[in-house]
Amino acid sequence: MTSSSKFIFVTGGVTSSLGKGIISASLAKLLQARGYSVTIQKFDPYINVDPGTLNPYEHGECYVTNDGAETDLDLGHYERFLNIPTSQANNVTTGRIYSDVIQKERRGDYLGKTVQVIPHITNEIKRRILILGSSGKYDFVITEIGGTIGDIESQPYVEAVRQLRWELEKHESLVIHLTLVPFLRTSGELKTKPTQHSVKELLSMGVQPNILVCRSEYPLSPEVRQKIALFCNIKLEAVIESLDAESIYDVPLHMLSEKLDEVVLNRMKMPLGEKPEMKNWTNFLHRLKNPTQEVDIALIGKYVELKDSYLSIAESFVHAGAANGCKVNLKWVHSEELNEHNVDFLLDYVQGILIAPGFGERGIEGKIEAAKYARVNDIPFFGICLGMQCAVIEFGRNVLKLPNANSTEFDEDAENKVIDIMENQKKIIDMGGTMRLGAYDCTIKEDSNALRAYRQHDIQERHRHRFEFNSSYKSVYREYGMTSVGINPDSGLVEIIEIPEHTWYVGVQFHPEYRSTVTNPHPLFVDFVKSALAKRNN
Image (tube, rainbow, N blue to C red):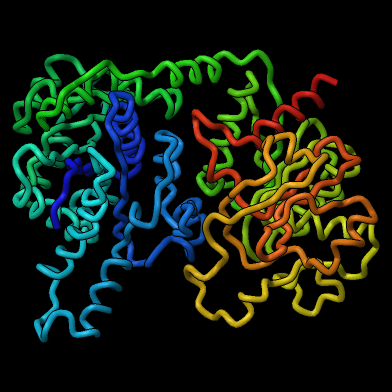
């Protein structure tokens, strides 16, 4: 397979969670700002076919693309930084690689050969890397290799990178290795040995890094940089300092000051062109760091111990807060701990309440209690996916007085199934990749908060659900004050509900957080924060 793109591979060593995804997205942003077209893909070494069946405690949130792929949360960073959509091709797992190879073997594609890690698994990995480059859309394809160098799970990926670099021309690829340079307080110095050992491990697998990005709490002195360059066989200018940042959105500017983009372009024999145009980015950072107001919003969820479970929602509030010139203080409230006896205490001072998405019965009654508290006290309310469904259940129980109003997800024998499983989901047995996934159309009605936020009638949003508002209840809900203001034009699925008499009470079946970016904050989040600000000021 031929390719018109150049390839950048990002690996990590010493320890996990150093920020390969943020470094990849930051470099991509700088290259994009210089006029190049860039995409990023993530290779995850776990054997799950995708993260769709993983508990959020295991892996953080599951991010969904327009084409319905359930992917790693790093793809959210890619989209938030670059403001361009990703796809199924941008996230591949070991499970997907092996599944595809085994399917080919069953079809007889290998003509009776013994199927092995080399060449069959590594060939499939290389094919997945090259497929984006062969599209002709991108000048650069950045490939982030998940895990840490030395992990057994990552070895086939590193071997595929080694082979691919040998097959490509000299200036068509490079490797960026992210390492840790720790500071030992007892000796009062930065230690380079972990970085040296990490590079040695990578070299033992046949891959020489071209650039080292060194995470550190303290600046690297010229002597430390020189030592790293000398013992790791790289140019001095290719030792890039990556200090702990106040915000992930500072990292592109830090990398710009370290000239990471220049080092990459010079190494790959590409013209530097104009200095990156980062005016919109710096304006966003200025608004983010210099708010004129504050607002307190409660995020009600059942995975709040791990903030990454709601990463896209939290980042959407960052974008919306900056757009409104205010700081959004999120109060993380565990729905299992919320009940009618303590709801006043836990939610008393907030100016907005968001009920987060999720699955399963655990913590549901707390979410329903939060929806009631927002409705009764006229507090701006935003329900996302399951959050919308909880609002519907609460309204059915306490306003319509429907006996045992519930969702069939929690009670299959409920007398009033106001939330029911979708018809095309009833016979599905497999759990992975079988929900209603990806982007679907929605038509918004007049005189609604949603229309005022979007400023257009026809929108498209991403979904991830099996259950829906039971349309047979639409008329009675409308009669009592909860209206269906957003409808899918093909299926009639209720996408958005509102209470018109309320200050701002909106529930959506889709996931707006997946579409919020630095340069295009999501209109619903922006309007919700604006409404919460008005509540605070009043």
